[in-house]
Amino acid sequence: MNVISRVARFYIDGFRQMTLGRTLWAVIAVKLIIIFAVLKVFFFPNFIKEHAPSGHEADYVASELEKRLSDNE
Image 1 (spheres, one colour):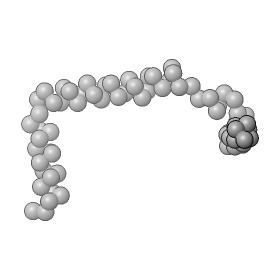
Image 2 (spheres, rainbow, N blue to C red; image 1 turned 90 degrees about the vertical axis):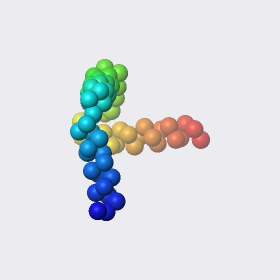
Image 3 (cartoon, rainbow, N blue to C red; image 1 turned 180 degrees about the vertical axis):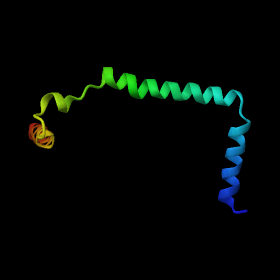
């Protein structure tokens, strides 16, 4: 057998035999869903969508970058 298939089989067999590990992975998955789905909605609003006209988001970002770069000079 080559090395890649042996490593793959090692991990597959390890995940099959887990008991407590499955519960821990489930807890990790739930936490990630909460972090990326729920918290994003409440704490990271879509700033560009609120301030740029529809269809002109790229122009808005470019103008803001130019404005901030000229302010720093």
